[in-house]
Amino acid sequence: MPKVKGADVIADVLIQEKVPYVFGICGHGNVGMLDALYERSDKIKLISPRHEQTAGHMADAYFRVAHRPVATLTSCGPGSANLPMALACAQADSSTFLAITANVPTSQFNRAPFQESYHHFQADFPSVVRPFVKRSFQPSRVDMLPTALRQAMHLMTSGRPSPVNIDVPYNVFQEEDDVELPQPRLDSAASRWAATPEQVEAAADLILGAVKPLIFIGHGVTLSEASAELTLLVNKLGIPVAMSPNGMGTLDMNHELSLGFIGRNGTYHANQAGRRCDFLLSLGARFDDRSSSSWIPGYSWNIPPTQVVQVDIDPAEIGRNYDPRLGIVADIQSFLRQLLMELEKRGGIADTRMSTNAWRAEIAGWKKTWETFIAPDFSADTNPMRPERVVADVQKLMPEDGILVCDSGAHHNWFMQFWKARRPQQMLNTWGYSAMGFGVSGVLGAKLAAPEKACVAVVGDGGFTMTPHVLCTAVEYEIPVVWVIWNNYGWGAIRDLQRGTFGREIGTSFTNGPNGSPYNPDFGAMARSCGVHGVKVGKSDDFSDALKAAIASNRPTVIDVEVDMMIKPPSVGTWQLPPLAHPEPLFGESWTPAMTDGTMR
Image 1 (tube, rainbow, N blue to C red):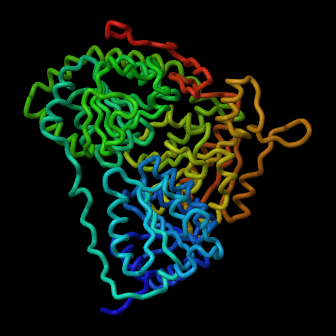
Image 2: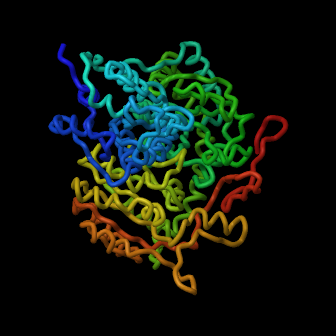
Image 3: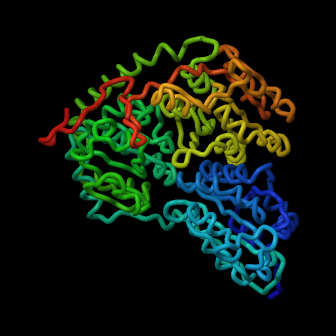
């Protein structure tokens, strides 16, 4: 068997596993790996953004759209130290990529060579990323690479997806050994986890016995690609659906039983249904604080007395925040198929749907109340623009199969509350870790995963100025995406929090001069200086025209949109940061507590 370099082993495994891209930045530590990629550039493409954080966000977003992992490549020291933000963002949202990091030569371990972390352990970069990856491997010989790569490729996508790190000493890229590549993996769908028959029967009993049932969906439904099964269940039983942002689109949000997001910045009818339902089927959702009104009873949920069946592929999430009547560790698609078969065996589904007619009618009344309240502002033509109008115009002009990528910021609250995703894997959010830069950078990875679809990122002015170098990458690699910059001259979400809590602000507005006039760079001019088309708009009609032209142009475009900084989303739940008191909803009932006799108001 001929001897091969370590870098060749890594590159060949990536190709064997059908990894189309490596997003990475050069450094002295990874030049051997770069050379292996050069030799194979007809089979795997290296894309080099201007910052390692962007490489990670691109890889994260690529997986969220394609559900196939790609890799990143970073060098020793600072190069890899720029990656944890993206790793943490991916891990928190159950996304994944293979992070290949370089380290110092093994012969120099613990001698403090250039860029070694050595104070607690030799070549200690794995300790930096350990909190944010499913596993970190550090093969110190070429013959260790096949096993590490085989395990890494399996771990990334098995169970709950999460990034995996392979930290490769410099010499291992260059040294040779007679090794054999691991066998290609089979489709992971062949090993989906399923519920036991007894669990399926018990879940069916609880569903069929409910008077006010509700389904709550999260990213687990998206990852399992269970949209068809979910829609079939909803149509058969007539059960309304509340959702977290990463589950949006798995049920068409124009469906009459889609209630939208639940939580502080959710919809009124979703929160009303959540706190009044007597039974809840939770599918791949974590019950995080923002979709649970910080777990304060009566604002989004009343658990108990609401009985919960919680289904999740990660056993650690079962019962983390609410004690379920029945916890099931299973892949969501497998569980839904089992449940549908069990319900078909029993018959009587039509009777079950009729028994919840009053419940659906009650929810329809709340929905009408909410839509009457919000309707006027979606057509308002103002300068600067109202936030609702921005959401409405993007919704109107985005193709039905287009992909929306949101960054962290005030704009994300508005899109969570009012966006209607039509299909799965088409609304990407930085939810659990809320990393600024995800939307700005991730839209590039989304476009590479779905080159035939329009990809639009809505990002804050603060988040965009953290990572403006994405403009260079879009031009260099001809990636035609659109950035809509939500320009409210500050860190708007935190400015609103400061004003609401303390009645004053500091460090949250972008100002210039002795009078503190609002300041931002001319984002359109910035874009044009990089070779990207850029425009600035302040009126609704101008924005619609600019967005329509940008999507049609098939070229990178920045649209700088001035948005009214004084308008806040109408909260319908709450969100608490202890020890601060939690605010009351701006719309609807302030609190619907559970009664001591087990009934609810």
